[in-house]
Amino acid sequence: VNAGDNCAMLFFDAIFYAVLCILGDWICEHPGVSKFFQLRADPSCPWELRRQEDEKVLAEKERVAKLDPASQILVVSDVSKVYRTSKADVHAVRGVSFAVEAGSVFGLLGTNGAGKTTTFKMICGQVTPSKGRIFVKGIDVAKDLHGVRKHIGYCPQFDALLDLMTVREHVELYARLKGLTGEALEAELTEKIETLRLAEYTESRAGQLSGGNKRKLST
Image 1: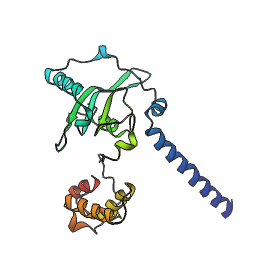
Image 2: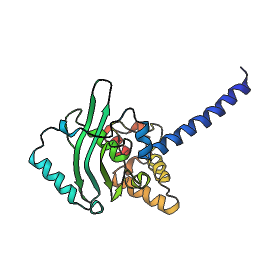
Image 3: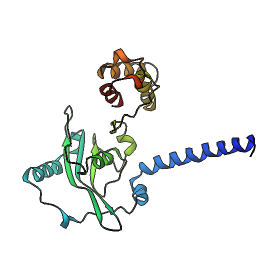
Image 4: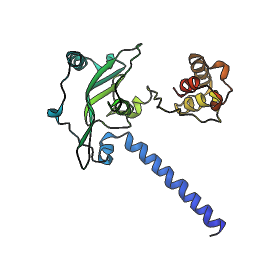
């Protein structure tokens, strides 16, 4: 193997993995296609397996069902996620419904394995629901995932940071990914850094931040 062969392989890998990334992103943005690729995902939920729901849960479902999705920041309506395995169906989420108004702070609580992470992944379009509908600012996640992602930010359970990049570089990176340039970019950088109360750490590397500040920057 000579240097020419190595360069050729590097060139091939760059093209191959770039195509894979583009294809994966395209699949995620088209729920019909992503359903086909999901490992034995059951398109329906056997409602006879539903557990008993209390009055408050049923009242919330009825309230959400009557809402105009455009009147809320977030609407999750009767959403379920079922995976089929060789042994038994796995019900990750069963008939979840809730709505969040503009200007409010909403917390989703539950025990380990209750389906919180799966629910957020469905809201972000990372996972396709087996049943139900999700709207972000009136936009149906199943129909316009690209439009939905313009209005949401997702902070995972780990710190999604690059230790050697500064606070400003992180915010600028995501602002540019959102398509901001020039004065709009600078205004957004200043506003976001001040909102997160990270102004004094603007030029500090992410790896030097405290745990709390890392979580704020990840947001």
